[in-house]
Structure formats: C-alpha cells, structure tokens
Length: 388
Ligand SMILES: [Zn+2]
Image 1 (cartoon, rainbow, N blue to C red):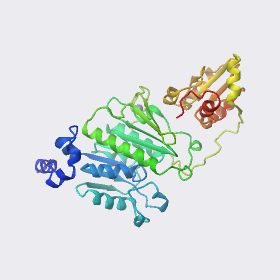
Image 2: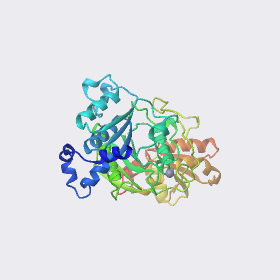
Image 3: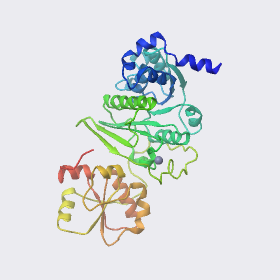
Image 4: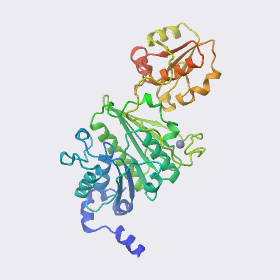
C-alpha cells in the first residue's frame, strides 16, 4: 500500500508538467529533479518576514510537503515585509493566512501546520521526518533551538537573519559543514540585543534574504553543489555589498563538535528584555580612534583585544590586535598583562563595552573601550578596510 502511494506521488501529472515546465527545462532540474522536489519535506519555522518568500517560492517550485510553525496572528505592522499575508488577513492566524495563500499558488502542496511555539518540548517531535529545516525566526532564543534541533536530528538548516539594512544567510548542520554555534557559541547577553519592535528593518531585506534561503533550500533538495554550506553570505543593501566569508566547523563546538549538547535548551526570550545597562556598575573610559592611531604610531605598547567573532576578524582588524571573542573574555582575564593598558573593540562598541566592564570588575585598572568600534576606526583612520 505504501509502495503504491509513494509511486503515485512521485509521478508528475500533466498539470504539473505544464506548471513546472520552465523549471524542468533546466538540465540541473529535469523531470527527475522535479520529482525529487515533489517528494521533499521542508519544515519552515516562522511564517514572517523571512518565511514569506520561503513559503511562496518553495510552494511555487513544487516542494511536495511544507511544514509551517507559527503561533502568531497577522498584525497590520507585519505587512510591509511579510508578503505571505494580506490586509484581509489582519487579525487572523498566520498559519491560516499562509495556508490560504500557499493553496492559491499551488494546490499540489501538502501543508502540515503547527500552530504553536517552536520550543524545546516539541521541537524534535515536530522536525523529525523532514528533509530540511528553514529558519525563518526573528530571535536568538528560537535560532539556537532551530540550530540544535538540526544538529541533533542531522537535518540541514537553511539560516537567514536580518537587521535594519543588513542580512545574512548560510546553510548549517549539513554533513561536514559548520553549525550556527560554530560561529556564535552562545546567545549574546540580553542587554546587547535590541528588542524586536525597536530594531527597524527595510521591508525588502527579509524578502531578499528569504529568497536566498528558498534558493539554497531548493539546491539542497536537488543535491546541487556550490551551496552556502561552509559559507556565510552577508548583505548590506545600502551599499549593495554581497560578501561571502568562508566559515569552518569548530571542533570545540558544543553542538556539532564535542556534542555536549544532547538535549534542547530554552533560552530566555530576548525580545522585550532590557536593552540597556548590564550587571556591572563599573564605568569604562573610551578612547577615540584617532587617539589610538596616534599612540600606535608613536610605538606605545598597548594590549588591543578584538572581542568580535572569528569571521568578523577575518574581514579585517586593527594592526597589532589579537582576537578574544566575547564568550572567551572571562577566561582570558588571568592571562592579561596588567601592566599594559588594555583597549577593547568590536564592531560598534557595544560588545567591547560589555567586555571592558568585565575586565574592570576583575580589577584590570587601565581598560579603555574604542569608541564606535571598528566601523568608526574605518571611517576615521583607515578607509581602505572593508566595512560590513
Ligand atoms: Zn557547530
């Protein structure tokens, strides 16, 4: 019976042959590829800004089964970017609105709806049996959950994220490829994360990134080479700079390396968390990029620590600095040369201020934070460096 059914479903009907004609014409797809798409099962976590183009394009492309996880209702303020939903759907559930739209685009698609939060208690159960997860989440808590679920179940995870005019995409958790934790081991401290409502975003940015996720998902399902496995794509629509950075699997990664993460963790919901302050009361003085440049030019011996992530360091760093990512700074304190003045920096000065306060709390007296981070350094000292 099962065999019968699977043979039936892999046949393409005449309607489907016509519908997908322009795609079947591609030698990299063909009828076999189209059948593979029809047999595929993709889980989309989040039917919002990223999830909208993902759902639309995967449905249009003929992915046979799409699982949708979302618990939210459509809000008027969603519509500038969440193009899966329309004005008539405001107030109704995103799942219902998405289902209607997908059915209209392609009635051949099977929709498996999960109108619930994706959380540690249900994530494995929901995701098991899918070929691919697409991460359409907008917060760190769920992003880590999606990553760990993907690694634990061995299902690749097509990642995307957006912030204002910038976006990122990659494919994590593929065989031999890195996972999200290989890049960012732990979620950032809540006070460094802007609340979701506050962080603005240009509507087309999630459209762009979500469309890239849909493309990568289709390539994964078709088994095509040259995907974003082992690469992080960063996009800045203000300059239209698209950059691809090589990323590697970290053997020390607690998810895919040492495998010490054996069960799922619910991180605190960051949205709406306090956005200012932090635990420390220590005040840290700032140093301006021009002052630092002058002192380096004079040959002063300074300890300059870059607290960003390794992939950011690869894009460019201040000469003479060394890399100690934020999550390793506490372990580094005993090794610091206390006689030297220590200057910390990151991208814009927030993470390094957090690190500088930790150093000050630990009794390192001469600590300074580079004002405006490497971005201001680039603007004021070395415009030949790459902005990101
Ligand atoms: Zn990893």
